[in-house]
Length: 319
Image (cartoon, rainbow, N blue to C red; front, side):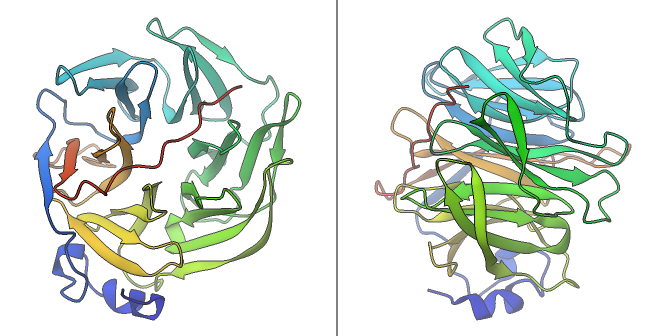
């Protein structure tokens, strides 16, 4: 494996495919998802075990997308809200949107707020990435709207009645929440400062303690860790915004492999499929009014010849 001390050398280049000292994961097969649209800001992919489908969002274009691997059909729903993250429930979805969390029923997408008073200053920050916790609650973080100031925070919901808890962990741009196999450690990224953190997770209270650096990327280099997912052996697959790929880290934070992709702005990843052996990858077309050509903004399907590479099944959100 490549130790954490080599992370600095990795990010002296803009594309992970150019990192010669990091091996490509063998037997990796990549294709563009046929029939899927070019997303302006594709994000938040999840696998929904009840509906046997992947769901993800185009934040900027206010759309929810659904792909059924058994039929290879992609459906597109207009949401009229900029949802930023998703979790599966027994009947639908939980979604973050600006400064609230919402319960969405499927297939009609009827939306209900989970709480009425937001802890966020909507003129300065909004919710960004989020994920179901091992206990079936929700963990979400925020982003400074101008992506400059460390005034965002981390939040847990479902541990103290109807109140959302501010965990008082400052961030500029929260992304990539994921947990260790035993659920005792949570990891996340502050994308804007290119840092990966870890902390002890309290499953009873939804609180974090003993925060530490899980891995660190030099500030001057232009690659940003974004969304993440975990496989059945505890390895973390971290999307690299501006990095044209995904890096795989073992539970100790050592880089052990990469997946190179034909788009630069990779945003998030999720394992799914009935056998959990398919990796769905989202990307961003543009953060400006200018539209880039495909494959930027496309959704990718990654499969592996190695049958041992498959996803860790996530809890169903029980909120």
